[in-house]
Image 1 (tube, rainbow over the protein chains, first blue to last red):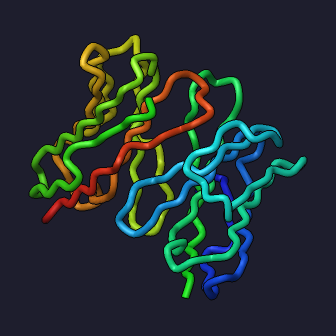
Image 2 (tube, chains in turn brown, blue):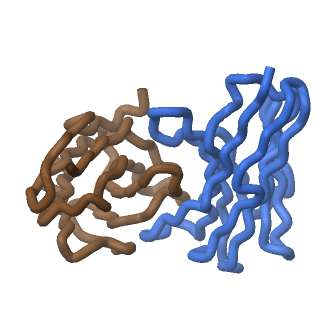
Image 3 (tube, rainbow over the protein chains, first blue to last red):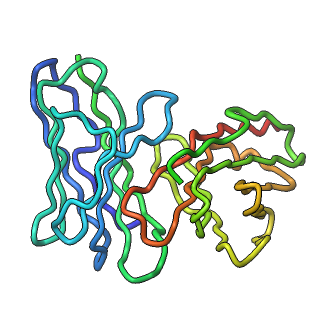
Length: 114
Length: 112
């Protein structure tokens, strides 16, 4: 158990709908990262938050947005969903001040768009 | 670095054989070189890492070697076992980078 909690574990929704994925980082971790992994694909970096502030963006679609709350949990919002958005979405967290980014992944949220 | 490639993309070995996966990066300022293992249905987990002031690091059956001049590092698994079957990712980075990019991934299959 990495200590990173993601909900829901599985989600099936229709095209055009909006969903919210939730992530609770490890206790004490200030950084939260979101990644998308499609079938047989690598880990695509979406966005990074540090202590409530956006720090970096990857290839995140305009239909997607994220935020990190004062209690450090994070949400990834996916709207106007398309079939191609079906993927495994991972959240990961890391601790500050270690000089490197050893990150700890959650178990992921499986999103199926039908 | 932002341009990160892994080779091979798939690798099949017989149980007991060795496996080597190579990660090539473009950012010469990278100074931390981890490898992650992703088992089916799970999130990736760190299995070994190395810093730029070290050329090689070993932990039981796994090792990582670094060639900073050529900008690549490799994961070595000896005496492979079926439970080593997974997807392996590298993630070279410089310090506390804000944009953490993973390599393209290598699917390792170990046949009994």
